[in-house]
Length: 213
Ligand code: SF4
Image 1 (spheres, rainbow, N blue to C red):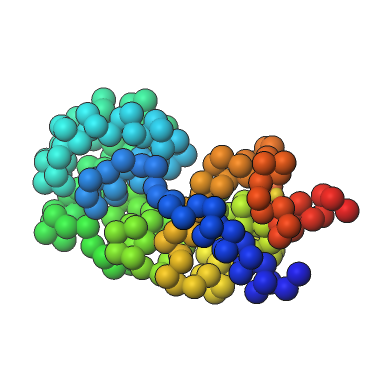
Image 2: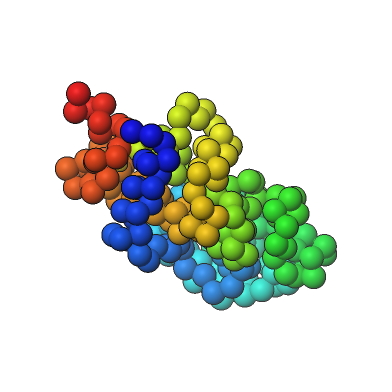
């Protein structure tokens, strides 16, 4: 199957079968989303959502978090993976937001990546969700599902996956395609045991096609 056809069929299937796909993280503004995404590294969205209500009540703005020490943030996030590092990053991130960006989350992806705890994937999530940028954040689900489906070929790093996906997915579909791939990876095309018998993408999936031979 030609790559352009594979992309077309798969995107069409998602459009028809998952017309609404959004982040499962709960947030009310860009600052809250940034905090939630930083916390979600190596952690489930479910656990992050259990933690953030109390955290946002105590630190409702970047200014309030910027006044806190990592030790003051730690108790609110201690049930999340790597709480020490994340507490340090949140304190540093909030301070930089206040001192350099007037307390606003910047839209520039390079500026975002200067914030403590913010790498390319996190910056891309903010870019795509808040500012509608034509980028593709690649997490473990996006990386795996794209490879299995055959949307990427030989991608060894998240950056290579990102480049291949953004080269083929129309810019206006990138925000929702990001969520399609994540949700499909989380609930159907799971890492250890993909549920191919429950998946509607088998006709165009490279992994499934090889398995059937
Ligand atoms: S057919 Fe199987 S491997 Fe392919 S996307 Fe669906 S669940 Fe994943």
